[in-house]
Each structure stands twice: as C-alpha cells, then as structure tokens.
Image (tube, rainbow, N blue to C red; front, side):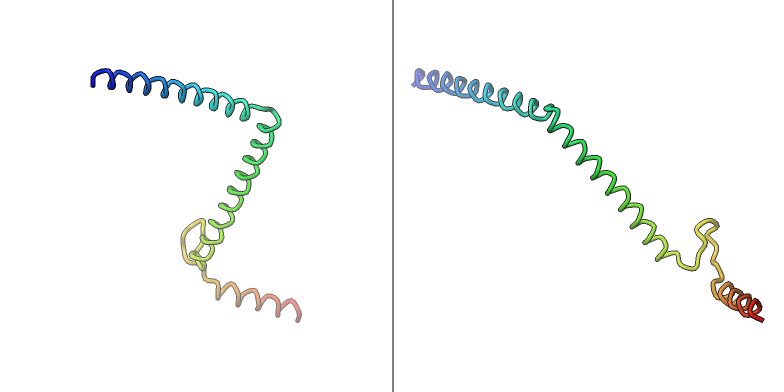
Amino acid sequence: MQLDKVAFIYELSDTLSKRRKNMDIDNLRKWQDFLNPNILKTNLTLTSLYIAFFESSKDYFVSEIKSFFSSGYSSETGEKQDTKKKFLFSIKNMLLMRV
C-alpha cells in the first residue's frame, strides 16, 4: 500500500514536470511569435486603428446625445436659449433686407 502511494507520487511529479516543460516551451513560442517584427507591426497598426475608431466614435456619439438632450440650452452657460425669438429675428432681418 505504501509503495503504491510512493509510485503514484513519483508518477504525478514526473507528469507535472513534463507539463511544465511543455508550458515553458509554449510560452516561449508565444513570446517569439508576439515579438516577430512583421506580426508586431501588424498588431500595432490594428490596435492604433481600433483606438482611433473608438475615440472618434465616442466623441461623435457623446456629442449627438448631448445635443439631443440639451436642445434649447446653451452648452456654455447652461441657460435656456430662446430659439423662437432668434428664429423670428432672423426671418425679420431677411425680410427687411429684401425691401
């Protein structure tokens, strides 16, 4: 019974050391692939394009949402703008210019 436990422990430690060596080799291979100049250049290009797209999309959507929810309010002062008066004033000016 005792010998079976010892044999099992030796077998288990041998299996684990083989797995550890395989994992080390796999990790080394992954790092070599990652640091390959051609692959690294492609990955950096794709990452920069993703970041640029994300930032421009974020700015666009935030400005659209902000303008939707703040229609009629000045974004600088936070006060309500009187758009009806401005609209009527612009029409009045256009009519006066024609006369």
